[in-house]
Amino acid sequence: MAIEETGEDFLSKNPSWAVDFSPSGSRVRLGETMTRRRLAATLEKISVDGPDAFYSGPIAEDMVASLRNVGGIMTLEDLANYTVVTRDTSHIDYRGYQITSTTAPSSGTIAMNILKVLDTYDEFFTPGTTELSTHRMIEAMKFAFGLRTRLGDPSFVHGMEEYENHILSAEMIDHIRQSISDSHTQDTSAYNPDGLEVVNSTGTAHIATVDHQGLAISATTTINRLFGNQIMCDRTGIIMNNEMDAIILHPDGSLFLIAGSAGSNWITTTTVQNIISGIDQNLAAQEILATPRVHHQLIPNHAIFETTYDNGTVDFLSQLGHEVTWYPPAASMAHLIRVNADGGFDPAGDPRLKNSGGVVALQRRKFW
Image (tube, rainbow, N blue to C red):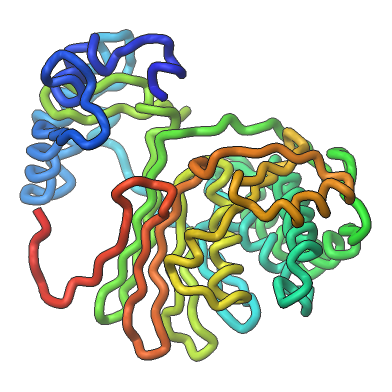
C-alpha cells in the first residue's frame, strides 16, 4: 500500500526504515515478526523520565536533525516551547444517553449534529425501518459535512465557539430535520458546503481504555498520510507526521460506551454508526464493530458502502437518487468498550484489522 502511494519502496531502500521493515533485505510479510527496537527504547525512556525527555535532550535532537537533513526548519526551541492546548468538551443527549466528545478543531461537534438530527426520529433502525433509517442517516451526514466545511481551529479562526453552538442549536437541528426528504436525496448545493474538500489520511490509529473505577480514555493518534512524511528518525525510530472522540454515559450517569475510530473522514461517520448500533440496536461490542458501514462526506456526492452492506438497502437508496459506490471493508478501523449492565467490560477490536481485539485485565500486570 505504501509502495502504491509513493511509487518507491522506501521501506527497504531507505536505511532508516529498512532496519525495522526489511531487516533481512526484503520487506517483512504477513505472519512474520517485526520489531521496532529503537522506538521501544524511546518509549521506555519517556515512560521513565517523563515528557521532558521527548521535548529536550537526545530524542529532540534526533528529531530536529532528521528533519533538517532533508530541508526541514524545526528547531530545538520549537520543541522546548511546545504546549498542549486543553479545550472544553461538548455534550448532547441522545435517546437518554449523554454523549461527550471533543470540540474544534476536531469533528466531534459534527458527529453530535448528526446524532441530534437522528434523535428527532422515533422510528429509527427499528424492525422494518432499516432502509429508510439508512437514508435519513446519510442525509444527516451530508448536512453535517456541509457544516464541517466551515469548521476551523479556534486558535486561529474567530468565532468557532459560537459556530459550534450554532451547529448544535435547536434551530439548526430543526432546519436540517425539515430539509431531509424521505422520498429523495438532493444536489450538493442543497447542503450548503462553503469550504474545501478535505484530503483523506491513512496514518491514524485509535485506542479505548477504561479502568475499574470508571476512568475512561478514548484516544486517537495520527501522523496524517500513510507513514506520515516518510521520515524516520535514525536513533529513536520516531516517524514524523505531515500534518500542516466519543464517550457515552448511561441515563443513570454511569459509563456505557467508549467509541472511536481511525480512518480520516470516515472517523466521524463510523463513530456515529457505532453509537447507533450500541444504543438504538443494543448490540454487543463485537457485533457493533462487525456491522457493515456506509460513509458520505458530501463532497464527492456519493454514498460509499462497504461491500458487505445489505444489497436490498443499497438498491432502495439508489431509487431515492443516491449515487452509490462500493469499498472494501478497510476504510475505517474502530475500537470500543461497552460497559454491561452488571458493570463488566465488553471490549472489542475491529474485525477489519488483523490482530485487533480487546482485553480485560483482572489484575495489575505488565503486558510488555
